[in-house]
Length: 118
Image 1 (tube, helix red, strand yellow):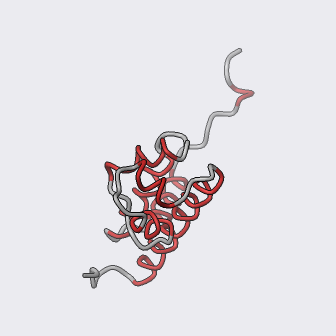
Image 2 (cartoon, rainbow, N blue to C red; image 1 turned 90 degrees about the vertical axis):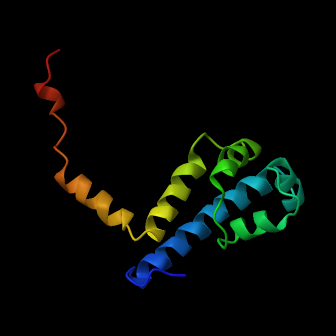
């Protein structure tokens, strides 16, 4: 059931992020020449359906499957972890993009390299 206090655009953003993550997974799978069924078996699913749902942005990845999926797809560690974390934060009502914008706006400027001792 959707959280009524969460603005609809956040749900839209979560869906968009899930589709982007699904595209990343699909592209990596196809680049390796893996079928849905083979990838599903490699990460412990009995059916290809969960992988299809993930690739189409319709299902979240179970946390315990993230490292298995990254290994099977030869993705750098935590590639999918951070994408999934972002989706879950949006689901909870956190506008991650706005938070990051605020952090960048309030972060101190890096020191001038010319002013650093040699």
